[in-house]
Image (cartoon, rainbow, N blue to C red):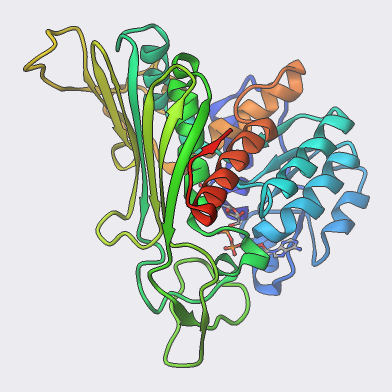
Length: 373
Ligand SMILES: NC(=O)c1ccc[n+]([C@@H]2O[C@H](COP(=O)([O-])OP(=O)(O)OC[C@H]3O[C@@H](n4cnc5c(N)ncnc54)[C@H](O)[C@@H]3O)[C@@H](O)[C@H]2O)c1
């Protein structure tokens, strides 16, 4: 994610020439020497250090991207905010609710702006979905169904990186993907459904042991026949949801879903219509609107300039945006927040909201009961 953030900062002026700030990649902190060299030679950082504290000692750093593993989020995130720098931090912003709340408290105390990596809400089709739901085009929302199905850990030889260790990652797929799913559900439908007020959850770990990792490895790396260690957090999680309005929902998240790659998306059904989105077809919103209650047909709306931020990236409908573009949108929203002093886009408060829901799923599973939020 350090690479993705670096590219987003570099590309910001290409897509948003009128942005309030023109970023410069001043300094990078990375303990891995190879990745540090790559940041300088490939991404053009002017300085690099193994220790993040050196970056905060500089007087030419105004904004910091925190893209390390979950176990560094709290220490670095709170220090960034306390030093008066604006903070762009990756989700889930810590290993647990306590970490996320500590980061949020530091941001509030310092009065700095924050952004959190809930990038899927930045897709133009998701913005259109939110507008349609908000305008009542689906009628009363009855259900919100969210799928966050990935295969990044489906291979049984996927290495035992920090992601599988509760001391380093906290939860498994809950913090990694269910957090994105909660943010999507509430971003798209929350204006109509109100908050999630109750849930009941289940979870499972299907790959119990994985090859031990050495050094910094991506979550796509595979190990060999060497020693294995235990997976300490969940591969799969699901929940039934109740919203304040009485709408119902369900969320399923997996990191071992063969055949799904990154099957992230949602369906929202209302009394008069429905809509559906899948990240793998990012520029398409499937809609079922303005028809009779029965035998209604779906159509595909290709996202066009004027829908969300597409116009900053492509000149016409049907020209696809990519994952990295969502991060450019995120960077721009943070810059707008800094320029106006008013939060734009997902902030640390949204991370607290999702961390609370993730924690509730854990409680529900542990205690085998519905949890009231
Ligand atoms: N928003 C998204 O879609 C998305 C996608 C992937 C990952 N993430 C999040 O991004 C974060 C990083 O994930 P990743 O896949 O890039 O992990 P990764 O393991 O590939 O990279 C983490 C990097 O942080 C470095 N690091 C470790 N300790 C550090 C420290 N003290 N100071 C500075 N750097 C340190 C590591 O050496 C490594 O280079 C996680 O919190 C993850 O949840 C978000």
